[in-house]
Length: 180
Image (cartoon, rainbow, N blue to C red; front, top):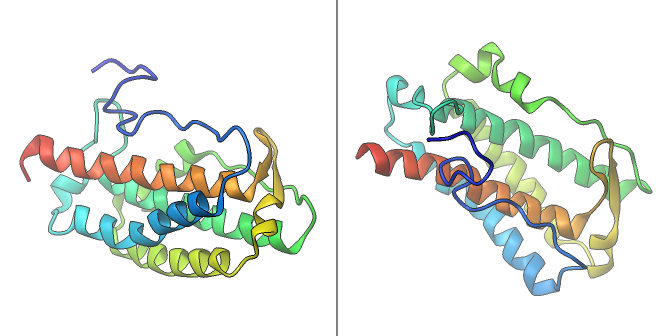
């Protein structure tokens, strides 16, 4: 498969499209439902996979399924903290990280997936509970990303709902493709 931005094996859910304006309460609730469901759905998607299968890339030149699971834990732990900063401070600057470099660290390449699945269980329970407890106006709060600029919390829910579906599809479609 070509390494192209529109390659469906790379972007099985399509590329993320940032919302043009504020999201409705129903849209935010739907995004939070996706976030709430991710840990169990990901656990199901990788259930029973041995090390050889976890070390299978989801596409030519892509991360292994193991790296995808660890990446989700890294990324969603970051967003949990970013959301907390945005709710507690006014337009806090946050720190970006090199996700490709993190995916190449030894733990992301070799560690069993259970610690990251457990981390996702906790992070998503806290993140979803926190966001569901917020009044509507809280979703206009922002954090400042050094590369992407101001990020409104309503748009962040859309981004991470997409991110959840995106990487979950990497795992489920790899299983389907290989008949696992």
